[in-house]
Amino acid sequence: MDNTTDFYVRLKEARQKKGLSQADAADKLNVSRQAISRWETGKGFPDINFLTPISELYDISIDELLGHNISVSEYELPDIEERMFKSDETSPDPSLPDDNDKTPASTSSHIKNIFNREYIFLILLLVISNFNTFIGLIVSIYVFVWTWRNRRHYKLILVLSVICILLELNNLYQVIDVFLPYNYSITVEEIS
Image (cartoon, rainbow, N blue to C red):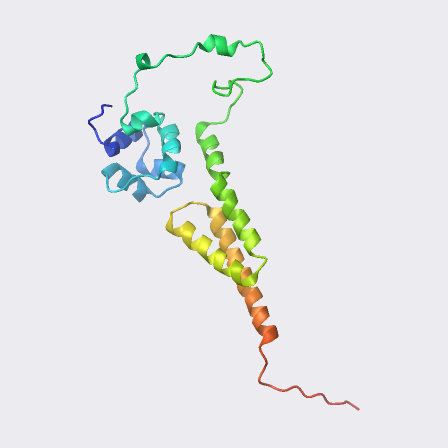
């Protein structure tokens, strides 16, 4: 791929070289097929967080995807044998691939996407905010709307948000039930 082609052309070529349809790529990246179509026609661009999963799925470097041709002669490659056979074998070099790691790239990127800081922060925010009825209701609605609008495919976050909203509405109903006076009177009669 050369530098003169646009990003969307390189993206489409990389997908086609991998033999994936737009629907297959969308399923593996947890986005809609329309999003893939927008990216490949230049009508939209993927979020920066999607560049790594896209490059792993299409087996192409992010530099190549963005149109930066880097030739091997520009950079000096470190001596791999020297790094592989260090005297300290108890701490393997994290930059080298691990032969014992049998996890497919798509699974590892999926795990990275699930357990990122934003995901954990949203879960903690939902849990902690629910200690106060009014704040919990507002935060739960905000998290749900934000997640939905930003096309974050955090299905667990969406489900937790709905559960928190329902719990807070129930708590709000109970607060209103306790503090609002009723318009009917209660009479007690003695049964003989």
